[in-house]
Image (cartoon, rainbow, N blue to C red; front, side):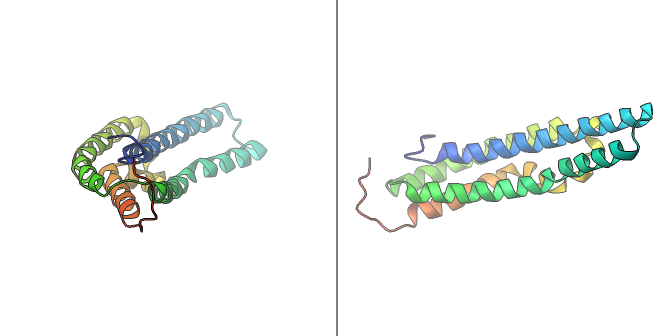
Length: 166
């Protein structure tokens, strides 16, 4: 069922897992960077050129919040393109529909995992910098639903072109 030739399941999961890990590691990197800035400030090195450079890096880390939205959109487009290129029978729509229920439940489990990873007090100061990441990664079940809808519409909404179905 997870085979790309039949159900597109691996493509859907790849999108969810990439968003989960990218979101977590963006928040983790920003947290570590804030601790580096705190250490430099405490040591008295956070001034002049060092401050300018570190502030630029801080802005770059914070821009990952916009990058995850771009990554989400790229994943939707790539699922649509790969689904459009596949040759498969429309009977697999029903299988995708049935498995979509289980994929949604597993995606909801990934929501819980993400929330547990970023909920400690260590991350609480950085979560305000990543509102888009928090919205996407705490709603992975809706992200999976979007992937299933886009994949199903493009996979089964195309015209038959005499493709050999395997």
